[in-house]
Length: 463
Image 1 (cartoon, rainbow, N blue to C red):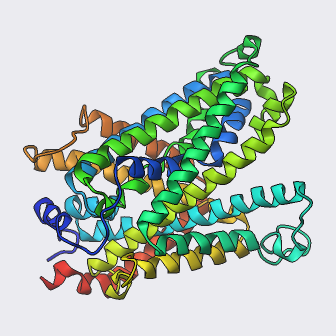
Image 2 (cartoon, one colour):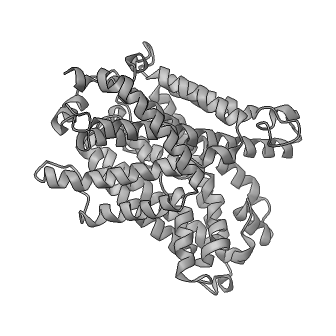
């Protein structure tokens, strides 16, 4: 059969979801929501809010977040429908397998492996930067060779902290999803608590005059800001990769997707209101706009709290995306598209430890020896490609199987999916040409691997 037509049926996937796959079902609604929040809210809440206000939207940056949030919500609602319908590990890869066929599923899985691995590498480099800054404030300085990747500074040979934190998160995920989820919950609680403290304290130092003019760059600036901050309001897709480790996936996965995005969006809007009310928007174009806003009103001590939130926030992002990457790799190997050696679970911890440790090793090498700007460029295009396919798949499935029982239904189909598709295409077109070239090379390599291996070795091909 043509590999583009070879599909898993919805019923087949639903039957797989109730089988004992060896993975431990220990994640409840809060655990899943925390994984989503861990993926969405990182250090960007302390950076992108100020930069988008200064360069694009002014105080109307809150409208930018609302527009970006609505666009992201369009894709989130599509993910929620699939999560309730097909509660199987693999997220967009598995959903595409059921609707668009094996070859398309392979390509989106290959795409997501690159995206999630590079997200971990980028975030690990950022975490290292914050840790080194705190260590310097405590009078501790790493030797020059351990401070960064080659080319990032005089004497730099390796970003040692980025390398070590990547390996540590991989080890944590290997030792069991239950303990890993507890650690992630703790980091998310710390992060959200500190963000709420920052918003509450900052609200007492707002000067409404700073909100005038509210839209200094016009509505075009608001849309420019929305394009910039869009990348701060995705990450909820990471929780859907843990479907086979959820206690009640059909009920809890759709709820967790929506809850995590809604909570994150409220915090982003609150932060936008506070910092643009505390300081003139044009002063916020720097690497630490929130800290600068508090310094502007004489609250320099808040910078230490912000650093604490950033450290907790970044660790939870590392956890969420490494979890997602390893589960997609596990799913592709279990389906025969990659060697089944990768799908073997740890005999004691019942985790897919081989892809987890390999991703940990790759991200350790990339984050330790590669400058951050070279790593970051490829991340966005992979996410947007996945959004386009998921939103398209909802429209296709509603046409083909309108009477299929759905635990959650995306409202206003096809309007909602088309909004997600349109906004993703708008953003993907704006990416630089070099990003397209690198992404194209990666996808060509993936397609060759599929033709030489996966097309013949997949479970469906043998059946």
